[in-house]
Length: 328
Image 1 (cartoon, rainbow, N blue to C red):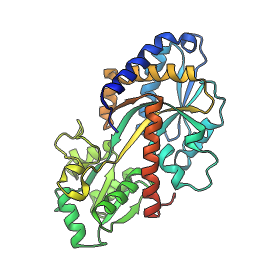
Image 2: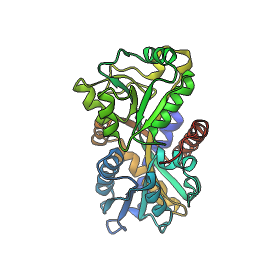
Image 3: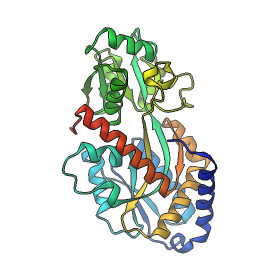
Image 4: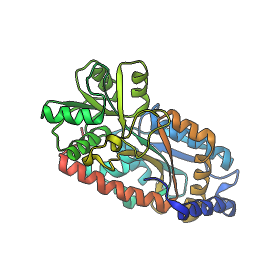
């Protein structure tokens, strides 16, 4: 999922150059843009959207606002964007769960994310962190796998809810290692982490910020991150793939973020906005915000983001099907 080679760099340079050559949508009197975040305020999705809105507003010299529309795992906000007028005024903060997992997880969706939404640009990727209670004897992924094999079906792992990235990453981990792990869904990350710290469950694949606070306070131990590289915020914590276990070679599970528009949005606007987004995402202020949230830059234009969504959708649909996961 990382950027690749010269071709990608040339694409980004072309997109940057395009911003100067497509002035129609960037006038000071341009219609304000609304970025719909299909989750509640305060989480990583909301933080990323507001940082992007700030940068785009300054660059475009026009209003860019964030509108939180939570519900149904992100589906309510996404459907609102799908049904909006495709004139560039309404956009969606895209997230792996909403555009790549939910189509396989929810039955009877009233829209098709891959047909009804147009990828504009992707800008970030966030790994999860595998944490265990501080009192646990487990100090590495190899220890955890050995424990699971010694006590088949006895290890519980928490998640913030059924069908979430943490839940399905746990299923992927169990499948790759040939173990049976018991999934315990919670209504949110914080109660799951609280029970984990108290020893009620044995492990969790968590989003970074809330887990990091408990790791630093000594209540949890971080034993691995699920990305392809170590994180600046957890430099001493290896990746799952670095465990040395053959069955986990190349293991990667990340949540990715970008912007999408309703189908029918003018190509000129999509290309211009992609160039502007990548300019904002390349700035130090934006990347510093990503670091605080445990994310890293993942830059790419419309074709890159479309290809990423296609790969993620195939991967997660397989995990949903094989695990029997359902939405809460």
